[in-house]
Image 1 (spheres, rainbow, N blue to C red):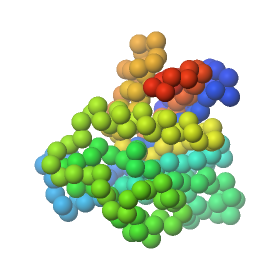
Image 2 (cartoon, rainbow, N blue to C red):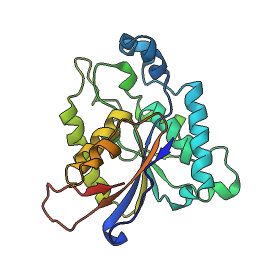
Image 3 (tube, rainbow, N blue to C red):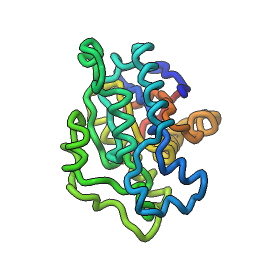
Image 4 (spheres, helix red, strand yellow):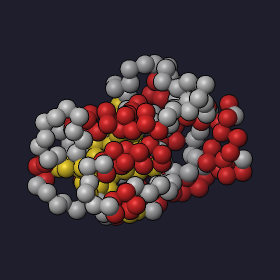
Length: 241
């Protein structure tokens, strides 16, 4: 599913285009539809995408190729969970691509700040960096600070305000990057709360209801993030769809 095509409303020198992608349907999504308590099962540790999820990935890959979007993206940032890395490589990576496509594939980097809501559920706990590297050699894991997952905790779910705090730090990091057009492969609740951070600076009341609705699996939603030149360290640029 593809929605909210990006448009430049400001000088491109002060903008970044973010293409936000939720991972393809995961095995844990399938199990949760039957019984939400299944998400507490250790058998769903770092859940992979399902058969339907792979089809969603293939469909989105065809879309980014057919529309020329792949050629415009300068960087892909992915959550280090299995389902997001499978989606990132499956949609934007070079695996199985012909020579012409491989030459246009953007670099992919893993970042902890855009991973799923932390705590309690084993499906949201990641593998070691060494295992991730062996599974995805084309992903850059140099930003990962810890070999093992020291962010996940078994006692409780991460508060939503903490997700938004992560979103602020993640967006600040994005503004340190030279790339102008960036794809972010992450998780529904995380992407939604990142957009809440952005819409807080918008005067348009339709932004929250339109842009900030829940993501479907493998949905691509594109936004322009505008740097208005404010120098305050707490300032977060606004988004337009």
